[in-house]
Image 1 (cartoon, helix red, strand yellow):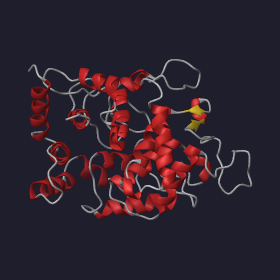
Image 2 (cartoon, rainbow, N blue to C red; image 1 turned 30 degrees about the horizontal axis):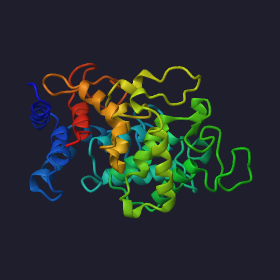
Image 3 (tube, rainbow, N blue to C red; image 1 turned 90 degrees about the vertical axis):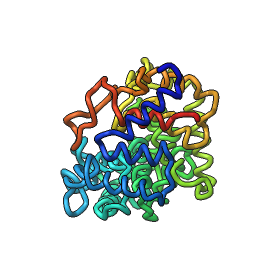
Length: 335
């Protein structure tokens, strides 16, 4: 196959014939773009929840709504509630299809979200961090959760990015302040040497871009623009963002994976910016070229970063053509 259109068509056919019902469902939803009420799509969604990875993960959930261990759900990696809900969201799970998903969303909000809107590793605001905040907001909205507390979480995500109304971490009397890990505005993170963390930036932009434009507050709009300016302030294909020691960027930027947790790849950076309306921005051309260069002669993309043996479900063999990564890459198309 020579042309891109031929390769893409072959890849789509491969996904539609996949043994995994979740792959078949998302190919119909996101690539064929069937209407939400299409009987074929609804049947595929139902099948994806009754068998395959979604069903396997939900079957491991405790009746109360958590996985592996009660509480805020960050540990143990990568089987507790945080990682299970993130995976379910990436698999296309929806709470309308299974009431256990609604139960799990409510449990996480009750145990991992502080009163000021910070998602936390332990439930207290001091445990907040951008990658966790962005991941969980995006995941819960993607799963169909409409809990009003998510408005607080979005407000903190935006406010802590711009710095509006947030005191320095040393101001212990302030109602809203930064903390040891989430230590300052513009994605500052302890684990990145208190410099701006581009991985966290991608997660926050995914979250802020999830609500429809008309539902975004002026604060959210300002935060989105600041985040876009940061990510596109350098050539994103080079990922020359601040690092803890000033060394080269992580090689994981160029390894496409599934599922995607706090580690970020260039494909997810493209996904986040595309969702905000920057799909055809020429500054993303180098990233798009990298995405296309990874497509093989049969139109497929390989799994380059994975969590085999660490999650409830494995999603393929490393460095082999992978339907989930192929689905992600085809969704990033510019047609």
